[in-house]
Amino acid sequence: MSDTLVFGTPPLPAGRPAVGDPCLLLGPVQLAPGGPADPLEPAPAEDLRTHLDRLGPRPTGSPALMTALDEAHLTGQGGAHVPVTAKWRRALTGRGPLTVVANGAESEPVAAKDGTLLRQRPHLVLDGLMIAAEALGAERAVVWLHGDDHGARQALLAALRERPWVLGHPAVEILDGPVHYLAGEASAIARAVHGGPALPTVRRHPQPGAPRTLVHNVETLARVALLARGQAPTGTRVLTVLGEGRAVVEVDARTTFADVLVDLGWTEAPQAVLLGGYGGMWARWARVAHLAVDESALAAEGLTLGAGVIAPLGAWACGVHQTAGLLGYLASMSARQCGPCVFGLPSLAEGMTALAAGRSGDGVARLLADAAIVEGRGACHHPDGATRLVASAVSTFADDVAAHAAGRPCGAGDIAWPGVDS
Ligand code: SF4
Image (cartoon, rainbow, N blue to C red; front, side, top):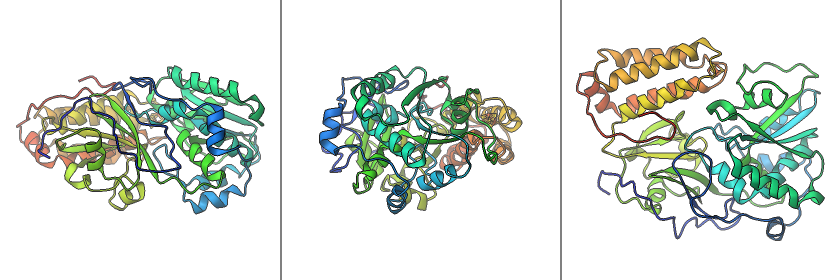
């Protein structure tokens, strides 16, 4: 590969995923760069008959399933990768009525794997939701979506119409959240499903009789549905890869980053990749090209793909300038409840913008000091995504950062990030 990234509309991978069963997606899709996960070309959706032919009837959820989930080391696929049974055990403390939520509100503007899964295999997600609700004795089962995700809602409604005789208890509710970056945050969802605002809140120890809420990403629940049927743990990774548009693909978790881009039609290497989305981290391409997309392998390198987003940055683009734009987006998405977030994120965005323009003076040290002040001080983890982005940009683009700090901005080309003003 040379050092210029080709942003074409790449062909979908022909050979991959060489994953065998059980897969989660029915196939890869191409999408527009931003917005809900509506495919550019019609994509298959699994009806109930095909779902049952493939997997058989849904088993009833029971607490005994926790053993299989522990043995599979199943972690949440929404970004944080918390062990599923840790959340189940926490949910089982307390006596208040329990709501289990399938979170399909992907808030990272690039992410589209959950929307794709909901469109392709709604029955698998609904099975996982019902199994979790039954296993934990929940009184409510909710699917939580962004209010503009009409495609996912239609897929779920069609699936629910097909399966009145397998509904079980509780009945599934579909709730629409606001179209906002923080609407998919677990504590925001927990407030909203009980009639409050969809805003993050400080986690407190729940009162003994207070309502309990367990929020799982929809891919996590799809994996629960497969494990509950006695299937081997799914050895795949579902990814959203940004290019001129977005591709959602499912690959064997041993697949390398280089394989992912080559299979999507890239012929030349990027300088870096943004891992996990806008609240994620930069990594030099040379550092990740030959790493597998497996989360535990990445964790050993101090990296994470979060909710499975890969955004390559071509050699012609300026990582410092791009990071300034992303920080501006993150600052604009604050729920404006906590001082470190309200004041700290705009300050980080302004500092990175000044650095990008070559007028920051000693700005790098100040930027890192500001990030350290903000780190961990919000009620939710939103500011931590911004500080992680700053720290990773300073190390990944070290030469460019030094040149900008010395008053020599590069004036390199721009990228149209979904939702970001350039
Ligand atoms: S940290 Fe920011 S986004 Fe999170 S609750 Fe506080 S103000 Fe809202």
